[in-house]
Length: 297
Length: 302
Ligand SMILES: [Fe+2]
Image (cartoon, rainbow over the protein chains, first blue to last red):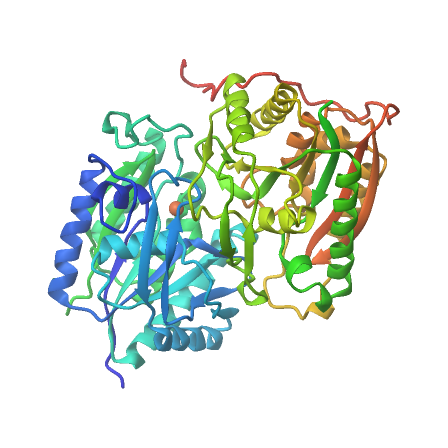
């Protein structure tokens, strides 16, 4: 098979607060409300993605941290209970998801060809990280499509943002080739926040929106600068600024998710649709979609 | 003092799951067993763990599920096997611990949820140091945003809680020394400390600990962070906690049970027994702090 293609790349952040506030049956805690701007943004993105139609979600999560190489979920069906280690009061989610292991293996093979260190995760007791689950739930709450889950190799911590970007652009090329060969229509999810400084206290009612704001104006300015470039389609400039942004905004882009996704799209000059920007416990989060020109939602 | 023994152990799963694959991993495994014996002989009635592998954001979190039960798999070393566990946590003590932390100005809360992801380091330490759940345990997270003041105050709050409860505890720090892993798969037989510099620093730290100089090492934490720690969370801070719980001194009999590489990192099992004599105060230049006063911005008024 061939003629597969990436039909969308999305910035799809994973604060568990958003799932909590949606009150899906899979999640045990109940919320009154909260973070509507981001949740309604996700809702609009879902509508666009449904209109385009796709076969598989490929997600790279900052919360599957593998310091040795890039890992891929290699178990066809994963079901368990995911409890967020940081916000267990908000996220205790029963998941049951299907993995496109064949596509995962072929991305892995292409990544090896790019010279990356890789590993398939085959342990059936493995618990899928909450970043993967949250981004996939918010993008496709019915879970009626399989996913490919990719870990975050922590090259930013080990080396630098520059080395991380080299690796993630290679992983992006590998992903694009594997998707093309698969014959499938894939949506890529970069599961990361933008600025990433949290408050270290929580309101008695976590969804008390009178307490929600960005941690600092400096971080807001950085977030807006990046979103402005995305809206203008200056995606190479986004990558060029990434070292400074990641450091200055303590951004979760250190995970490589955004660089990977833009790399897989070929770093196009392509304006993005910003569905929403909002903060979650002080961190900056945007829901953003990039659609290749021949795939208009 | 309410602490009968200090223990430092690495949290990587190799000594638990595959010690036979490498001579050094086996030495660490044996050392874990020696440390377990020392804990029993010390007269401890509790075992308290500070794990550098359990990050938190909303202050510090204390595990309070009385019987956490799960089959854990490490996110990186998943191919080494699964780690089924059932632990015995002293839930009332966890509440007291969190309350003592709050009394000193810290943000702290207990967590008691089925399926809570107890970190690999805590699982490895409890399975090897307390295999039959002989001692009720406590586990506290490492707050990503905490620096020295919060960590020292957390140590003092831990001592307060032990004192109030009348417990005698072995306190365990789960942390490697140098933490640089290889970035490629290295066959177990070829494991070594990532660089000679890391190895030399590890040996210097162990020399201090062997001499009982716990607070001296704690005082050198920032330098250790600079020299041999990849900046994953923040500072090398676990020994700030341990020394604060144990009275911020150098009056210990130290014993290094084993030192060996685990996938490039420096892993050591060390025990520190409180004594009357000590090395004297050599490296004390950090300030002491009793109460955490919150984040104080230098640019705006609080
Ligand atoms: Fe995150």
